[in-house]
Image 1: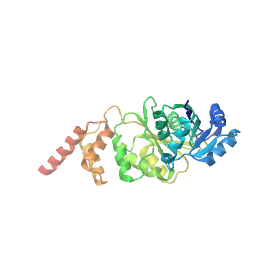
Image 2: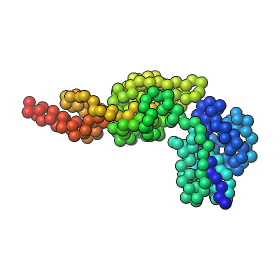
Image 3: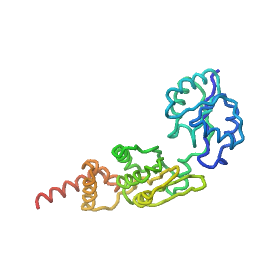
Image 4: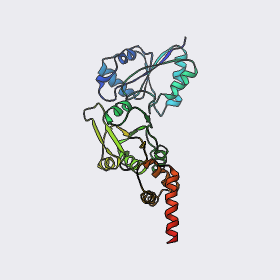
Length: 283
């Protein structure tokens, strides 16, 4: 018989949040694949667990190379436990490749549910949580980041992102540019830890705050695009498009972004820009 792959959630901050089953699975696993073996050692010490299984590292650097070995162990009948530094494996962390490979071999995959920064941030954000989508980490490069944000500028569901502290100010500024300066958001820092902080406000205000420097693990929650079109006259639409063009955006991208932030059809924004151009030529 084949073995079992167990995806185990680990605390995102306070070790007391560890699910009761985690200690039992750590003790029983024949193979433990850990994103960081040093963090695993600290976790087992805090939980008072003595592991007897083989411990291997499994991270973004060696994930592709190590997956076949772990699958071989699973096919051979081993119980393999996968843990990441914090939260659930495969959620912007290593794990997806191993799960996919295990499923392909008809290996049983189960989980020890645990803390999630995504759900925790949503719960405390004060923003709608009935519908949401998780976007992971935004691209690091400015152009790619703006392009990715524009793809979801009209998304009505609440958006959740992870971000590194040293890129937070740039990302929030880009969000303010694409989603609109007044779009509501929450920056959740060091969730469940000693210096936990949730900063709520318009994106432009949060970007100014982050420019002073922020530390810790960051989760960003952003309000979805408005359900109803914003009441904006043609002159204001043209002004917003012009501001974006002057900032370096192509007209097509600027029109799409303004349409997304106002909730208006792109055709309406395009028509306003064309009409203003024709009027200027007549003058």
